[in-house]
Amino acid sequence: MPINRTLADGLVFVFLASATALLLDQPSDAEATAAKQQRTAHINTCVPAVGRPGVTCTATVKDTPQAQASPVRIYFARGPDSAWIAEILH
Image: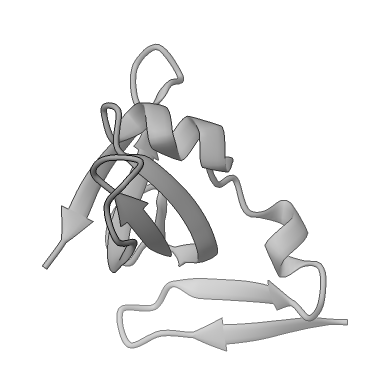
């Protein structure tokens, strides 16, 4: 059953209990890796981004195959050609 939430600015979000993750457009690990320009990325969880289109994800990233994996938060959005664009959040 949908759960409606009204935010302070009047926007209404509809949360679909267990189906929310299935409906979220988020990058696969391969797409995340491509968006991060040769860094290896593994997506853990994603949520809708606040205040802009796309998603914010927790991920682990390696700069090289031998590097230690680092936990990061990454913002992903679709570019004009529908490819994922990534921005590491600090």
